[in-house]
Length: 273
Image 1 (cartoon, rainbow, N blue to C red):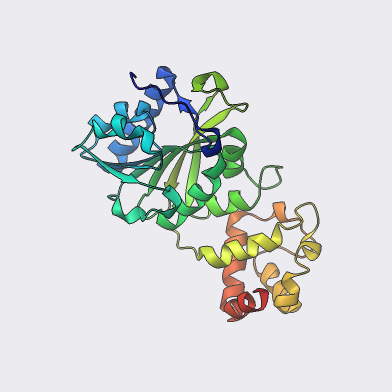
Image 2 (spheres, rainbow, N blue to C red):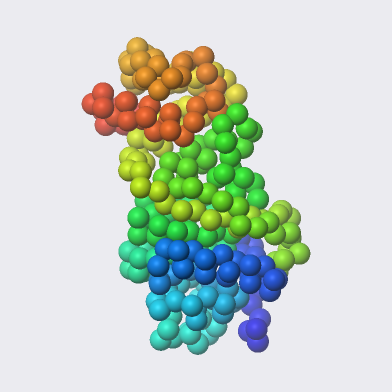
């Protein structure tokens, strides 16, 4: 790259420089493209275009979302093969990009909200490959009865299968972060989930993750009848004596659906607010 731009710490920028890792990521995305027959791709935060250089020849449609205008000279050299949406990724209308694969070296400070937003657009982007902090990636893929398992695990696994693609050390980036990174592949399944009610339930269940649900759900049972909550947990094979990390994603989804069917979910939101 002839363009030299300093990464902005306030935006969580770390530029991937390791060509071997870029090739590995590209090969995985090629495999996804071949299997899924998706010929469009959207890249979040392409920056200096390190990954873009590898990927843009492979797709008939290429869209990028970039906030940092300093990269305009670098990215505009791809036009007209590249469609650029300038601005905050979290405020963009993602449907402006074609249906296809979503990829990105996600800024550390907004990786969580970006992934949670992907859930609501996952039918439009049924395949996603994200580079995130190792800790965040571990939480996405965590299973019950583990320390990393929590709200993020359940939300992401509610509609997606996750797989580790590779692990990257700090030396792969400029500037070098203080942590390791994961590249994870998320593949949308066919399940329909009400994310609003699921997120609402998880917020309460994991409010005191080291305590049993009876304690974690104290405020929840002030909103919903306690017997309704007990019956809902029983219906999915759980109880108020379980800890939140003991329930599977499927159990949380079914419990959320049970609460929603009670007809009082939206009334509960009004009470909370």
